[in-house]
Length: 404
Image 1: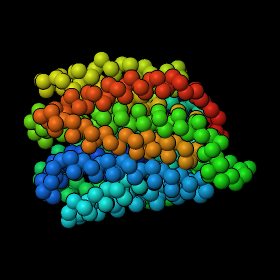
Image 2: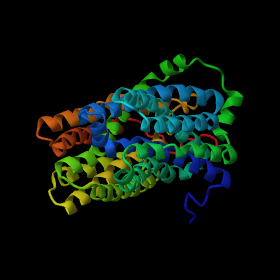
Image 3: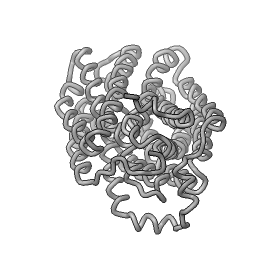
Image 4: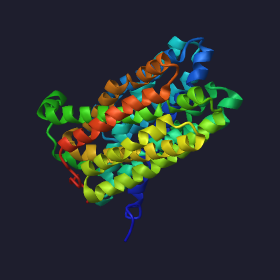
């Protein structure tokens, strides 16, 4: 039996690859900071909590980008706004490396958040509207784990670049994603679903559409708030946890990050594929329930081996649940809002969850730099609430767009 990847036409492969790489490189540019947070604080003569505020700003401004680029996607298609967005976040990443002081750095990271917020909704709608229906589960898992691959790339670059060239060069490398826009221009076609809808769609004001689908929109925001507490609660401060609480050197932190990101990648593909068989909601619930007993191993282990195993397993489960999200949200969204609602709801969830990093940092510092405790508290609560929210929603697996 052919795998979903083998069933794709060349045009579908190019579209999926562009969407995957866009999310990968966007995530790389975001996660660069989590590896050099303490180095940036030292350069700007401030504490880690103030620098962590830049992560909060990035997350908080992402809904603005999701809204602006989502509106552009509904009117002009997915392809052109995606190219513009990739160029924008690449330039802002480069400028972050030149920041002369903390204030400038914070402003640039806030603007970067706007650009980052636009990418996921554009890429997810373009990919899910283009690939065959029966391939959505696995490809959703692969697509979402572009975020993890970006984290993995950041870990690898950190190991070789930061110790030798300094933290600013981590951001200089982040300009390279701009080259992806050339690939998109040459090889990627517009979403066939969007093109088909344009021929018959009546122009309805965006506000009217949101009011018409208000309950769905609110539900997805709450769901994505929980999901963002899961991902950022386990990822953003984990390198700092290893550096500060366990006194591990940069090379070891990088190695552990590489291992747990491999776990995340495997989990996303596994649960994304599983969701095609048992449904999106059931796959999310199973992944979250499996993650709960892993928390003590992940956050309170004392040996390097157990920390690594715990990190691998927690990311396998949490990013496994995330692997279902691109397909689930695009299937839930009505056609007229498919370019806007998934990305905007996702990023509004990010906005609410943007307090995570400074919250965990302040709790940890008040308890003697106990980052393990701070992370465990947040993640446990989220792992209880997300399955409840998933169960309350509806199943929309295999909803038809245009392609079958």
